[in-house]
Length: 97
Image (cartoon, rainbow, N blue to C red; front, side):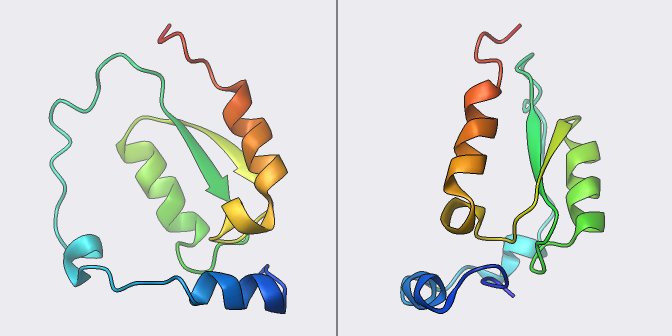
C-alpha cells in the first residue's frame, strides 16, 4: 500500500526506514482551532495513493479549507515523483497573500 508506484529498489529502501506510528494518529480528533492563520493552504492530492485514498484526501482538503493540486503518484510521492512534487511545491505562493 505504501509503495504501489515504487520499483523494487525504491520499495526496499522505503520499507527499511519505516518506523511505528502511534495508532491514535488516524483515530483521535484533531483540534484545528488557530490553524487558519490567513496562510494559503494547498493540498497535494496523490491520485494513486492506496494508503490514504482519494475520498479521504478530499475530506481532509475540505476540512482545512485548502485548494488542491493533483499528482499522479502513490503515498510515497517524495520517492516516486520527486521532481513532480518539487515542481508543485515550487509553484506555491509563499507570500501569504
